[in-house]
Image (tube, rainbow, N blue to C red; front, top):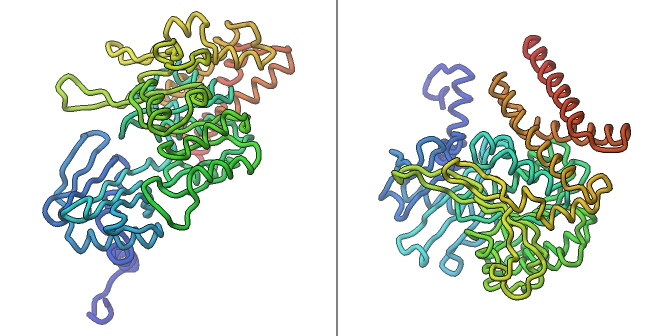
Length: 465
């Protein structure tokens, strides 16, 4: 076109124009521009298209309105692309489409609705995923969770417990689940099951994880060629000993998941997300809404509740982990009335911190005792186990401290956190062989020395560059 018009353009300019052309023809146009901003969390487009601007939720500024008004052609073009890419219908018989959006440098989850559910036509809600997985040190920095809470979660993951991350929409459930995946040792295989791809599988694979992704039929979709979620879970049991990660427990797959938990087919951690504002809310949803027998619900070990909290002026909200609760096994009918729920940590609004309860501090956790009973060095020794939890908390706090002191914020990201966890496990194994026990102080000293060596290597590498 430039040649035809007699224009002289540099190659870099032609390349830029070519990218723009691709973006607005085979791509997603303005959506791709918005998705490039790492601080954009949600993009909302209301129907009818062309009547109102796009709304976004920004990491720093909260809910914002843009000056972008998509046309009807834009909305219909996006819908056509989502149908083709997902292989799922979007019409009057199937007015809801859940799928994922992959564009250069960004990915997100998309919910599209149309008539008759949306009488005025197409509407979109897009949740942008972070480019890299969230990690527990990053959550500590954002005050989503306390250092001790992060140490406890790390301990529970190594203890191969079953965890449900509960909360409302936009509470950070999927991000927390991703940070739990980062805590799984790379020597274990991971199988993930999702109807819409949200878990950071591709990124973890680049870090050397042995991970198999399974995509199943959406709970909102009937028919189609995709395997149902419950069949996906049963299939995962035939793939060998693996950690099982469920993107979201929302329908018939709940029964299959609890079947897997009860028969002990999975010797490693099992974790998933579910909608629920409290431990009892999770019980009510799993048992009364999803039809899982009460006795099967006891296969749940830990419920982590995360929800947004609002500022006093109501203008801001902050994502926080509010409870880490263990599910005991002695109750028969109602876990709330019969003491089946025991909080290990609860959120203190005055301190804006997740704090341990007396039950945790006094060693009254049956789940933790169960983990200790399987480890010779901790059997019957609550103090030794508690010190190991505290050790994990101290290491994650140390990463945050060093990141702020040195300016190397990348040590809070998954790449380095995985290396840090590897170093912790290797050093622990080394100390165990040398002295026949876990000397937590010595483990921390050797790990801290490893950390400084790694930072020195990075400083030398940067100076060389």
